[in-house]
Length: 427
Image (cartoon, rainbow, N blue to C red; front, side, top):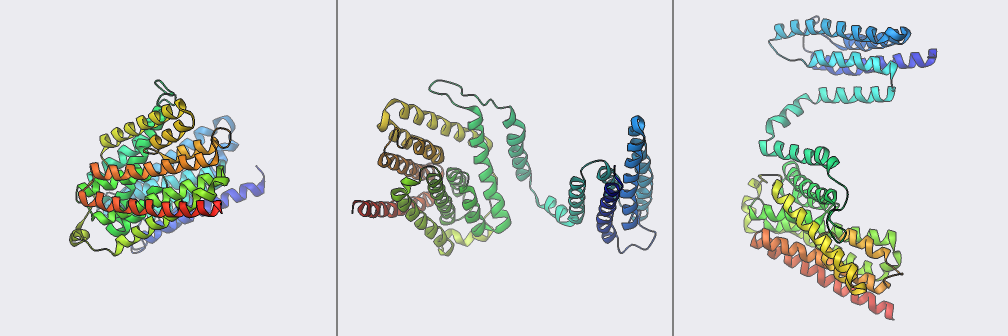
């Protein structure tokens, strides 16, 4: 290793020690001199010690691993003794300083032997975690068991189960891809959890609308399912929950417009006007829900979502959507142009993005532009109707009425805009 590179690595190690030591020193700044086990100087020296040990390891050749291991064990033993003495003096039982010191030693060694960028990033992360002590403890004290359980289930669904779920179709007519079904379940659960977190962090009004808009980036149907259940449980005002779905629906309209613009821009002359008009209406009615006061508003400040999501209901609904997708595929493959439109109508109940991509790819070889536009708008329409159906089946009466009114207004605006676009093209 060249001298300049070696010196720069030692400098990074020193910076790591100073950064972590600064946080530890600030945390114990009110303690008298000599009372703390380790401060900014000790942490800086610890990181340099780790770097020196790593340098000796590299110089030792085959036996270098023993040098590094022995140095780390000796350092851990010494710092642990001093931290135990500090705990006895202060009457505490914290291992944070000891663990942080050992990690500083290790990061100093890694800065010399490994990637200095990763070492520096880990040092910043470590200092951030140490500095956020009060915030983290406060957050842990407020978290409930349903929240923790739901977060663990969602993480297990994503990082434990998903990697082992088969990615090959099963069954006739192209079958059902288990991985796709499981992804739908993750999206449904994730959006429901997002809405829960949004309400907890931002309050009922802002939380519902913001989480609805964010959830619409992935699946407006999932937002509808989550908000319908919240309305049935009386956890928030029906008009606000419907407003959240309206925002999610507006985002889905924009998603379809963006997909068509990327894949088949020639369709936009007739497709964009109705979709953008419906988007404007949905956004306007959603924002109006912030200003509308209804009887549930008396309990709005006390309203809270009691459970992020119900696991088995999410799985069941994901399977149902998967069956709808297969049915739509079978219909579209069996009946030519008419089948494509009917298949789009069926698949629209589950996912409008996939059918938009498929229909756009059929122009102009299989479908004319007019047929493609009609198929995509049909899928968008059935997707909007599916939200009304979900609201009627799973949500409260008030929620279903609000959502039906919003959907009717979107249909009306889209119809007028489509008529105007057709008239302009004909002229």
